[in-house]
Length: 272
Image 1: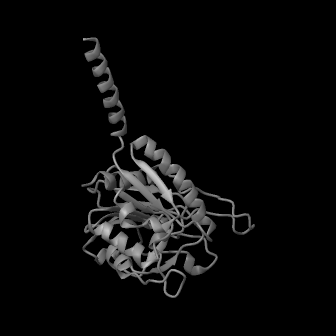
Image 2 (image 1 turned 60 degrees about the vertical axis):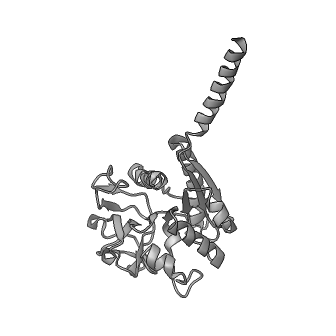
Image 3 (image 1 turned 180 degrees about the horizontal axis):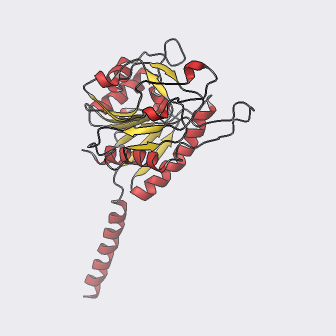
């Protein structure tokens, strides 16, 4: 009886350890570059801290790397969600591994510059599957300046990502992008959040085209053919004028915007 009791205690101890590890619901890996643009570097640094805290609160694991060579089939097989924080892969093997991952049930979340493409530039539109089919946005077609908050409108209210969000909410400061493709005309795209007209004029300039006075601008969407969410936020306001590069705003300063981000990640991680 004594030995039986000891065996039961040992078994229960191992069961408890297993149950504790089993609370990890899914695994996330974030890729970033964090070079050159101080605003994107600032966003990457605060993102890694924020997502690590969210991982502890919501029971997922979070790894982050600036080694894009890890964007390969073997590494991706260990993760349920991939995040692009501030860029995209540029080598053909990395692109093919990511496309294979997404076409075989993988999930993705991208921020701001992860969707950027402009020809000619250091980030040309030379990946049609990603920019035209997967994201649907095409190429970059302009932005507001400087980074400011906007009133955002929740769309497609039945979608789990935005179901609990208010009809409108105020974002954190951001540099807002517009695109060459009209996402409303793409039957595969579900627009989740757009800029509300009450935001206009949006931006402060000094260049006139950097201030938007009208138009329709989606800032978060998903593609029905893939497990993905793109969110345009991810550019902090920086002190460029005095050459200090000090961070003047935080992408995670809006509680409702944070809920949009974590709702998206949990939906991607739990969705089968």
